[in-house]
Image (tube, rainbow, N blue to C red; front, top):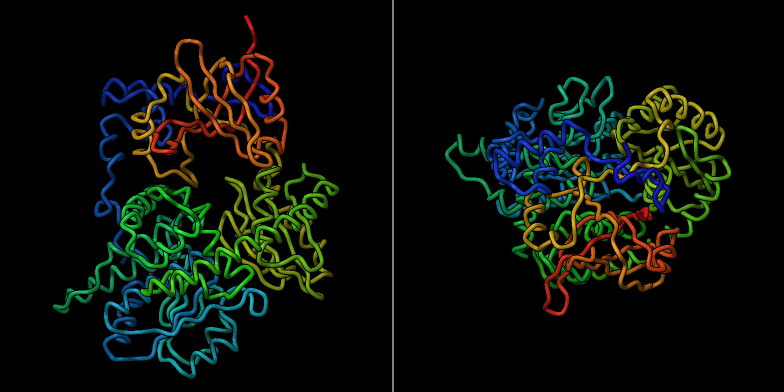
Length: 581
């Protein structure tokens, strides 16, 4: 049954409430653990059983952290790393140019610095070299180093790894092929011979586990390794920015990492938070939407290693200069993205938005923004999306998927079939290179593979609502309780509540396309709301000209600290006219 009888909201969505199992479970949590109903509903949706709520609300990293040795090659990788450290060998780090790669590299540099050692950082240029190790770069690094650590890349790089001419250790999380590169160790929870229990880890989490194992081996030899807890801010940033599911150990890593980040001890993240005008304690949202995009900006349209160097530096002045540069690059990136997005959406609409795959390709589209544009197409259509930018005969593209559809495996299959020059990734995101001649056949085949997985069967995404709430119950105390069930993000969406039959007492357009309103239930409860981008669709105009009509309003609760006043605010996502009875 439609929640609040909303079968088609102002944004064209059906509202869906919790199923009977969630309702029963939340009632049991209220009875057993004496928690407020809104919090119980969130916990029930996360699968928390009565009696387990305390452990969930206060997760202990020590209890959830997996044994690093449960991953193939881990002992070997850590031992080879330590031999290089103790023997004064020359170490190079080859990292991907995104947040996960930069954080992974910074973790290693941080650890080595604490040991009085250094490493050469190498990050490939997105345009000139593309993703992952390449033969010339690996040959050059191999000539001058004894050990190369490939982080957030390398699992499919057979030829470049073979060309290195020195020992190579791979610490990655991207889907592995049937064979692995011939090297010292490949630590990757997504190797085909892994059981998949840790498949949700990002590369920085894999690197962190390797450092846990290295410290363990050092203790066995009677020596102490660097403090690892203080490095969890980097793991948290990478986990959120790489859209890894915030479940199990990932959730514990991010929670602890946010606490570390709030101490403002890492110069790079302090400087980045300041240029992003982050004035409150960081939350997962800030990592994904304020800090992550700025770190990524260097790899997208500027100096590829800028983000990693910012995260790794221990010099506040250097951090400030790099953060300002990244902030400027991010603003430039947004302009480029907007232009490409307009062309890509027009092309996708002309091709049709109901197919299992939504895709677009264009001449000269900047390879640094095609992934972001693919995300926008996916969000707009609720379908997997691929966006490709051509330069000459070859196009470099990026894809984003929807829940339940493994895009990375399909892209990898296309590469194996010869329809792509190369391609790989993971379930929710993938990269590819394709020739102009193979573009249409490749997209046709990809559409076929994704259709077999069920892509294209869903309509506009339903709006899932956790329950009803009245304005008077939306207190700062409730918001704090709900935050304890977080952090929220991939696979753990923030709770969304519906406020039934509310009267709008104030409505004003703010900025270019945002809406600010105040609403009440007529019984003394009043709350303010903000809807970003409301005037990009029908939501803003309808609520601005409400004419005294009552509306059901749905969104996520947050705290608004403004002018020394702390109040609850609704991040308004949708609305529907309330039937007058």
